Length: 81
Image 1 (cartoon, rainbow, N blue to C red):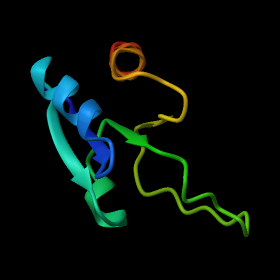
Image 2 (image 1 turned 60 degrees about the horizontal axis):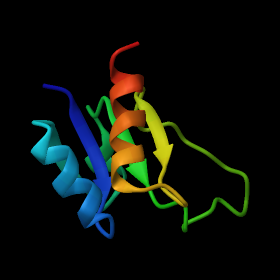
Image 3 (image 1 turned 180 degrees about the vertical axis):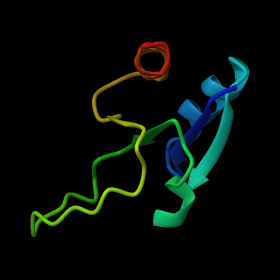
């Protein structure tokens, strides 16, 4: 099953993804995202300086404004490409 990284504050998303059988890892720092097929973030930690270092080759989904079900659907569409 794909490994999904989820930010700590998104507990409802973590529960929904675990219910669907995904291996969910909590994202506390950059190294947690390594090896993830997809990451779900809140987007609250915006990159003000415009510097980005890719830590994962997987897709990144920004959760703001989305329900847990909508996020699960996006994860499934990204994983099943």
